[in-house]
Length: 89
Image (cartoon, rainbow, N blue to C red; front, side, top):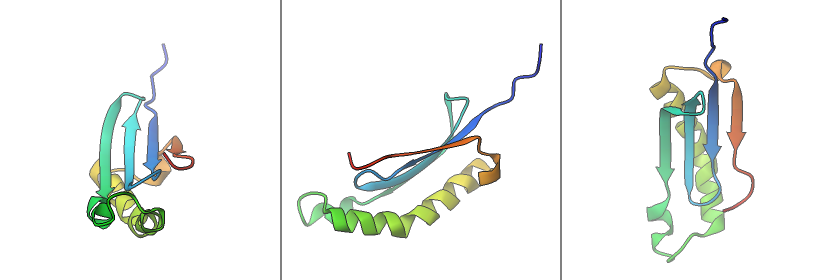
C-alpha cells in the first residue's frame, strides 16, 4: 500500500459582512481559521451596506490570509486547492 498524502485546501469567504479564510486538511480537520468581522461597521445602519462591506473585504483580505498561514505554520505553496465564495449570500 502506498503512503497517503494529506491534502490541504484554503477556503476564502467574502460573500457578505465578514472576511474569512481557513485551511482544512483532508476535508475534515481545520488547521487554521481567521474571521474579520464587520459588525461594528454596519451596526449604525441597521444592516449590511454593500459598499462598506466591499471596502472592508479589500482592506482585510491580505491581513486575514497572512494570519491564517501564520497560524497554520504553512505557506500558499503548500495548498493543493483554493476555494472561494462566488457572489453575495
